[in-house]
Structure formats: structure tokens, C-alpha cells
Length: 277
Image (cartoon, rainbow, N blue to C red; front, side, top):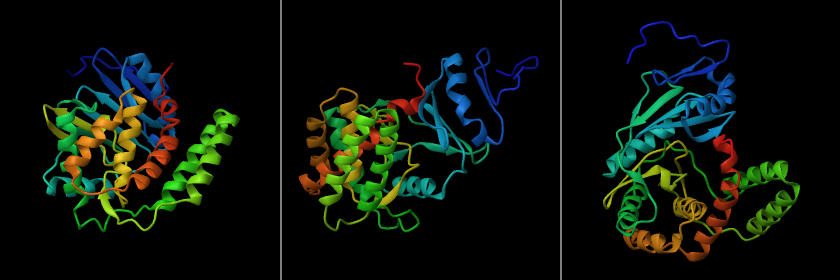
């Protein structure tokens, strides 16, 4: 609905017009990202991911709007194209508002919560994605990159709670002393969670390829497992069904190593959603 009169935005870089369901964002976006959580709380909007220096992801019904400090990366477009080529159903990306305000749309369904049929279908979908051999344009990320990301999470934890931070650094030291061996690099989602998998019956679709890379396949299963745990869902039955659909062996020790890293990296996620509680 188009407003019939002027909307006063004030001096803030972000304003929410509840009556017309409009979010106004000033440019340059990197200077106003920090104001988004407050505006969304006033507008009762949902912020599903937030890093003040990088991006905010907002949800409206079945659409997701990415507000970025940096332009839409080529890796996300490449990964989405490869996923569609592999026969996966993916969100449509609309950059009509510019390369820093991007909308994902076209995916109906509920977030994945470990349903058996959907887990097997997800395993089959990941097998097709991981089998794509044309991902040379994607950045490569291996074991060292995984440890670097875990160290960043340790520093954030230490800022929030020095005792937790010290324990986290000890865990990363242990992980660094026993890394997996040489693992093949595959085209992977990179940040797979239940929110990024949409389920309709036993059919699944994927969204949120912003962290797609070429790297060990175990990371996709690890981030999904940790997300299920964080939502109070036992990941074991879902992982069994997923691996049955995946039909490729992933050594349990490798998966455990990536799960430990994913758990560390997800430990500050609640603070990144800008929620009042």
C-alpha cells in the first residue's frame, strides 16, 4: 500500500513505519546497521541474523531481506546457481533495491526440525550439491579456516565472560592439536541451519548461501546438528536419516571435530540477533 502522505523519518538512519509495513534505511548502510535492532523491536519485526559490522537479515513471512555493509558477493550467486543445477529448490534473489539490500523469496514451508522424511531428502540434496565439480569460483576454506573462526568466537566469549573464554581457548587448542587429515573439498552450503532449510511434507529447499565455500563436507552436517541442539532437538535421529540419504561415508571422528568447532562458533549467536531478552 502506497502512503497517501509524507512519512517522517527523523534524523535516525533507520526508521520503521508500522502502518504501511515499510522499513526505511539510509545510506551508507554500514553506518546505520547498528540502529536496526532497535527499529525492528519497535516495529515487531524479526531479526534472524545480525553482525553490526557486516550484515543484518530480516524475516517477513516467507521472505528474507539482507541489509549488507558490503555488496552482494559473487560466491552466493555462484553457489545458488550450482545448487539449482544440482536440482535443488532454492530461494529467488532479488537485488532490485541495490546490491546491499537483497531479498530472498519464493520459499514456502517451515524450518527444518529433524523430521525423518525431510532429513533423508536433505541428505540426498546435499549429496547432489557436494557432487558439483564447477565450484572453482567459490572461496576455499579448510581446517585452518575452521580453527580461525573458532578463535574469533573465543575472543567474543572472552569479552562476554573471561571464564568461558578461557575454557573456549583450551578447547580450540585441543582441536588444533588433533585436526582431521586431508579431506576432499566439495561445494558446500557453509552455514546450514534448520532456518535455512524449508520443509513442505518430505520436500526440502535451501536458502542463505552467503557463506558458501569449497571445503570439507562435514561442516554442513555439523552446523545443522549444532543448530538442532540449540533448539532443544536431538540431532541423532535426523543425522542418521540424513546420512542414509547422503549415501557417502563421513568418518565419525571428522564429524565430531567439526561439530565441536560449530558449537564454539554458534555460542555467541544469541547475542547476534539483537533480541531484548
